[in-house]
Image 1 (cartoon, rainbow over the protein chains, first blue to last red):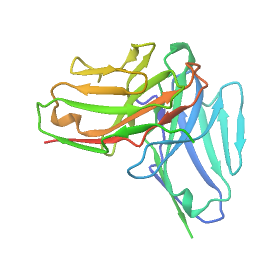
Image 2 (tube, rainbow over the protein chains, first blue to last red):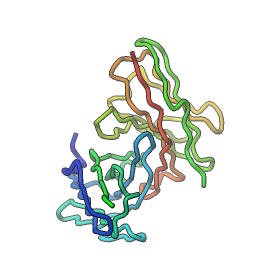
Image 3 (cartoon, rainbow over the protein chains, first blue to last red):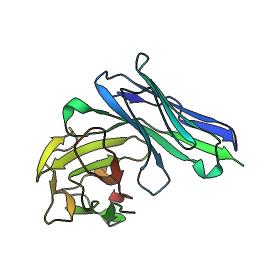
Length: 114
Length: 115
């Protein structure tokens, strides 16, 4: 079951630069997308989300872009900070299911170097 | 800030034993979930729970698994007879409303080790 895919297992960027994390999905019924950040030995922490009726959502240093035709979303972090180093998960939900179940990608480990 | 809590943080058990993982969701939330993450793999949905009943469960959630909300605050996951492959991090999550656009908040997880 690869409905949500994060094809880059890791990403390394310099502090102050932009980090771009990518996510692809296959299920056209997905209509809500979220990014979670996870540190070792902790639970996923909600970062930012976007509904399928939008193509961009911004919150401080974090921006999520959604390209529905390409079934692709991306998370931009700018400027990147060493504290951003973590595993980032993309997740999606299907509003028609009424259960709120989230389908996660495999995660991308971001390392921000000072 | 309200948060989801889980106990214990680490549970070690022998194969075949029963375990109960406990969660205290955020107090005014109405929708509850269990997910798990096997080491090195993605976070997987197990079950969703609303109004004292399961609303959806995955193929993983077989007859060995059960969930319960025994009182107004706790939400538990029971594995009746643990198997080696049940070793994983188990995350509880809660959500205020069932709207798909509402955010799920996760607890810190319980690491289950089955020997």
